[in-house]
Image (cartoon, rainbow, N blue to C red; front, side, top):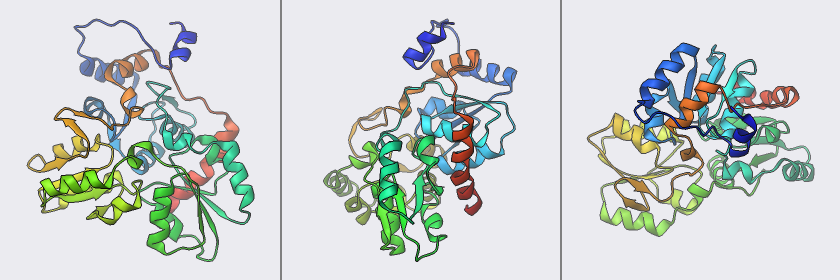
Length: 326
């Protein structure tokens, strides 16, 4: 294997026998190597189905912290795989495609964020896990959409806070806690930020009994008309526990796979549906991972996440503070 070519591509590209059942092959090689596959809810359905554990950022962080495996494959985006490496520094953490980035993490570069922090001295820096490992090294505590309110609420109310990088989630937390001393970094997720209020209203007109459920990374105008606001896992739990049968799902559509599995009798509608099989605003980064890449990554144990020990030790501090609060 020419790893220099792999590094240039960001993934292993090799012809494999078309007769191979990739799901069977992945399970076999995973067992042989005693590997664990973690996958985010926004992955392709077939990727979710071959994972040992599927979850949102918080659940995956908690799971990673509890693992003993020396070989972990993360089917998600790079900042998530970095978080696993930070929590399991002695494990080899594989990622099927190094190109699986994140527009939100990219919106907060280390040098720019450092200058922003310097402009606001004596602020506690709360950083969403949707950020690079380097950015975490200059943060005081991390959070996820599942526990952002709990994390900020745990801080002394008189202490000013910097919240980064998602301005929509930050605005939601600031408004919910009525916390005027929060300074927000102006970053956003391109998927959640592109939902348009009128499209959701139109969909609601077609399905008047549907509950509108939205992720707090969406713009405030959408949150204001939502029946429920929550993290990806919270949205899943809401659809499962609700007596309602119809839902308009305003987040990345990968979660609908789990919603249908848990509640096959219920109906899930998504803004911008092109047809029954395709959504035009899926996260292209999340969808870079597929079964072929996962199989080849497990086979060669490459690509993997490589972080300097100093970055790991510094970034672990805010992550572990978050996990203790949770």
